Length: 313
Image (cartoon, rainbow, N blue to C red; front, side, top):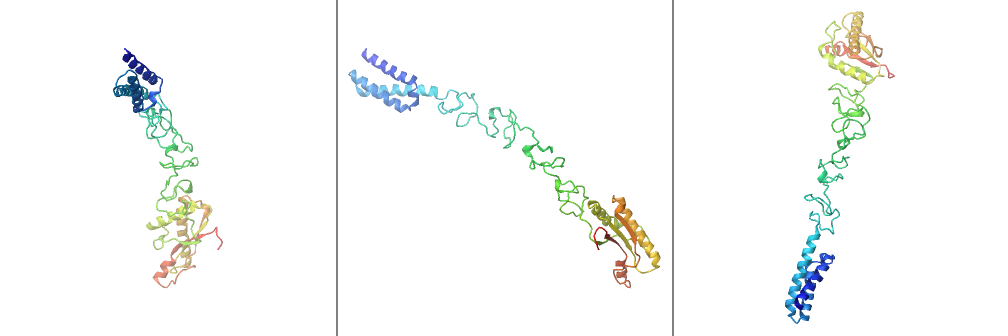
C-alpha cells in the first residue's frame, strides 16, 4: 500500500511540475535525473532497492517531461517552437521563416501566402495582393518600376525603358535632340542637328548639261543636305552663286550662271527654306578658281557656290 502511495505521489509531483510549465522548459534528461533521484529516495524510504526506484523514477520523469513539452512546443504546427514563435497563430501548411512568421521572399511587405505576384522588383509599390501598382510619376507611359529615366520631362517621346528615344536614328536621343526628324544619312552635331554650312562652300555634285540650267541627277543628295543644314539653323542666310568657265559670250555666261543659281534656290525653297534667306546671283566667268586654259581648270570653274551672308567676310 505504501509503495503504491509512493509511486502515486511521485507521479503527482512530476505531473504537477510538468503542468505548471517547469518540465517543458527542461530537456528530457534533466527530467529523468530528477525523477531518478525522487524514485530512488522514495524506494529507500520504503525499504526497497534504490537502483530499481531510481530507474522507475527516471523513466516516469523523462516520459512526462517529453510528452508535456512536445504537446505544447509548437501549437500552430509550423515547425517553430512556441517559445521562439513570434507568429504563434500561423495557419497550417504555410511556409514560415525562423521566427515562425509567413515568409516574404520578394520583400514587398506582403506575405508569400497572400502574395499574388511573387518576385516583385525591389522598391516597387504594391497593392494588397503584392502586385506592383502602375505608378508613372513622370507620365511618360512607362511605370516607375521599370523606368530607367524616372525624371523625363513632360512630352518627351521615350523608349521602352522610359528614356528619351532616338526617333531619327542620328545617335542623339530624347531631349538632347533639338532636331528629332533629321533624315537618315545626314551628319549631325551634338544637338542632333545638321551643322550650319561653312563661310563658303562649293556644292560638289551639283552639275548641269552644257548650256542648260536643269539640275543633273546627282544634284539631289548634296542639295538635300544643304536644305537640312539651313532648316536646322534658321538664322543662317546664304547667297547661291552660279559660275561658268570662260568659253563663249560673257553676257550669255552670266545669264546662264544666274539661271543655274536660281534652280538651286528653287530646290531649297521647295524643301522648306524661307525664300528671304536665299538669294541667287550669276557671276559667269568673272570669278575663276583655276586656269581656264585646261579642261581640268574649266571643270573647276563651272560650279555653284554657297556664301553665308550672316557672317562677316
